[in-house]
Length: 247
Image 1 (tube, rainbow, N blue to C red):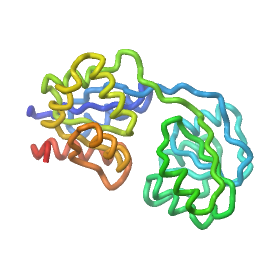
Image 2 (tube, helix red, strand yellow):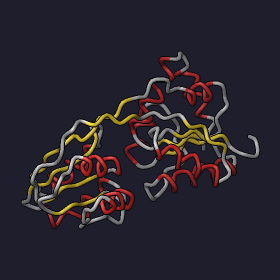
Image 3 (cartoon, rainbow, N blue to C red):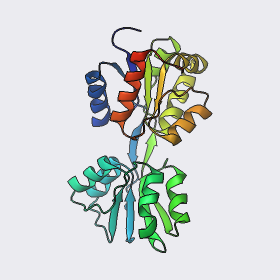
Image 4 (cartoon, one colour):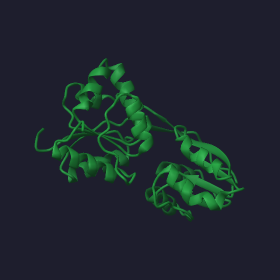
């Protein structure tokens, strides 16, 4: 491994990939940006529910652009989503201490029992949030604000992994795992890419992403306690520097 570990990142091709690349460089890594997600808005907005839950900055921006006005309380899965909602002029009632679907369910459990809750998010949201809110006694509906697709041309990182030219990879959702492997398959390097990642540090942002990666045959090295890209990037770069890939 060179003095600067080569770390792949798969965030959408907007300010998120730009910020991720900058953060990896600050941490001493050589970023390999390979956007695996593209946002395709549906034009839908949440209905008049007493509780509306948002799980991403993208969702906040889309409903604000559509002129949506909440009829009840607005909740966010984490601080970045909350900050985006507040920047768009929305009051945020609940942000869980644990930035995950399970953490949000725990934080909302007492508030939503017997109430209607609308979850506004992408078409690839985890069932954990919906199932958890229903188990808490809520009447849950889902509004798909946008679809997540794989951008044309994605696949530089799988080719580098197949060639043994990656030291780390930061997977930020189950879908980035699926799209990475799909891109590898289209380029005829899926098996080699999986083998190449076995010698790299594979980081996943949370348990659902870790499960998707392991189910796909990837060895996962790090899952940070805090489900943020900053925590993920720090964990992957630190593990790269110790040379403990595949542990």
